[in-house]
Length: 336
Image (cartoon, rainbow, N blue to C red; front, side):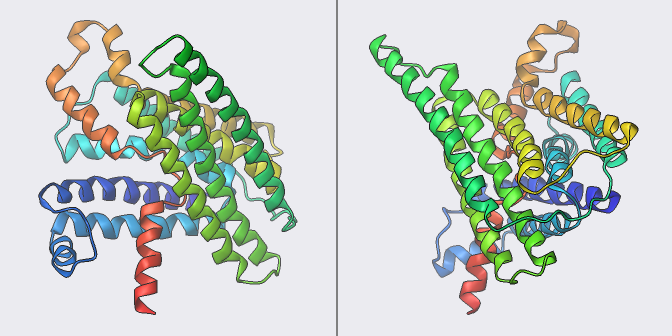
């Protein structure tokens, strides 16, 4: 179990730090295209190239972690990516971190230890290929409810002639993107379980392809929310929904279960709670810091720059990173 925990932490570190390095490298680069000059410019940019390789390596490690441990363990631990990103930004980019940031990092770290201590090896449950349609129907039903709720509030907003988006819209977009991120992890794990149970090996790339589509759709919904809403609300809802969806769908669709030992179950539940709380604190720290005494507040200008950088690199730590796997798929196609 600890091996999969370490793999997940290393994977999410590679994904998040890699994206920061890629973003830093693109500052002096033109918009990406398949033109030879542009490709050479990206390939010769050291920060972008290192970030790209770290991103791919992180995605491969995450797939390996998924093949070793339940989604209900991997998905919450992957939520620590924001904590790793904050530490990297503090020491490498010299960004200021406040008291709440450190509290969030500490809680996420303790939660990871709790998940590792409470998690236990499980025998692969017998699953049927019919679970995929049921899982799709469940997600579709949730989206029908959320989109219906969204339409009602949009209609009320038009009737009241309000120009600003409602908090409800930010929450719904965040929840929808988080649900898709969590489902992406479950479908990837399902492919490995099919392989263990003797099904055709073709089901693994099929499940991974479906996972990529879910992850890509999640980024679309997240982008919609970030375009007109507040990043702190959208990102918090997405991160929490991703963790909760991964845990619940893993238990319902993949047959994963809580540990039988009361002590292990306690540590696992405490670990989940600490990670979720830490993620919420990290995402909303710049708003919560306003309620602390002034002597505990960092310089506001540097804190604003830290927030902008974090929001630009923020990712709810999905198991299958869309941009990473897109690069992998396109590179494999070019070789063919």
